[in-house]
Length: 475
Ligand SMILES: [Zn+2]
Image 1 (cartoon, helix red, strand yellow):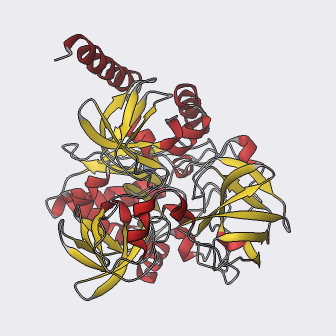
Image 2: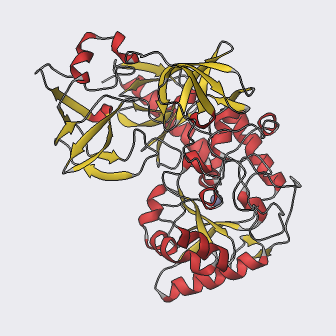
Image 3: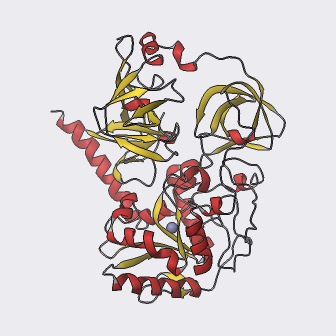
């Protein structure tokens, strides 16, 4: 046993985690905070991507109204807006009085059902948000900071109309698993009756810009909250018709040249939450690299490579391109005409090729699935239990058709490789900041990459533990 080294490593992790915990009592709350852009990015707010465009329904921009619409693209105006707030009864959490009253009523009703809600975090001022954001920027750099904390002026908490709730015993506080706790279930079912909606629902990150936050509730007033709930819209963006619905102009193919149909943000990853690289003017021609993910295309423009929303690309010329991934490794070809494969984990089958699509069902580990066609961005169209859907190729093996042995992972990252952390980096139980932190890996450590990247996150092994880390801080 290499005691000294292992000891040093784990001590560093512990110290680092402990440090974060002490310096940052509000850490979980921060993870909950919306995550928008830097001021530089705000200057680009008129450029489109990801699906937030002006709207069929009218959006309320007056911050003093209970239905004000705020997100990364629609900062508060004035940006330092400060509402009049009151303390929520029996707590030091502050909200606008309309929201505070509604919350108290809701908490009372929950208590009657035997469910004890705790108010965790409410109003945050512009200056408080600025402190937090700057703190995170110092620790993690701007790009990551903007994913876990809101740029001041863009947080719903600044309106005095948003509240993070929890269980009185703290169970699953500000974590995705909160949804399955008594309070999580109760508010998920009842909050709209008191004028609140769950603002950042599961799988809506590409629309809202924020990962799943089953604890973050937004007061809209009962009539609007009920309308939103009853409409079936999974986000306020979708309700107002500013969602990322596919436009007709989306390229059918992923290779060749395309033209931008609007001033278009090119980002470091597939989603509006990623860092902005450059805004490409409308009408420019760009090169498609062949990779597509959740409606976003990887492109090259002006010697940069990045991702743009396919909604604002129009085909120019599309060569009948061979599959991009086929050049690297020979055994690869066995998967391209495979008729079946086996799952190597309990595996979500989704409605489309990517984690942002709806889960159709979960296929148990070790089951055989029929492969219906060609791979797309690492995902396979499969049939299982009479249903069609898509699964990540990372968790398929034993591809058979010609009897050739399979590759188990996406060729791009299948090689067992390693990377170095360039910041103290949280390793989480899944791919996203909504997932539980397993441990914090100190800056400069080497981690083993276990499989394919998912929405910018890598499955890694470190200090004997498996988990996921953001690719932004790996080199
Ligand atoms: Zn929140």
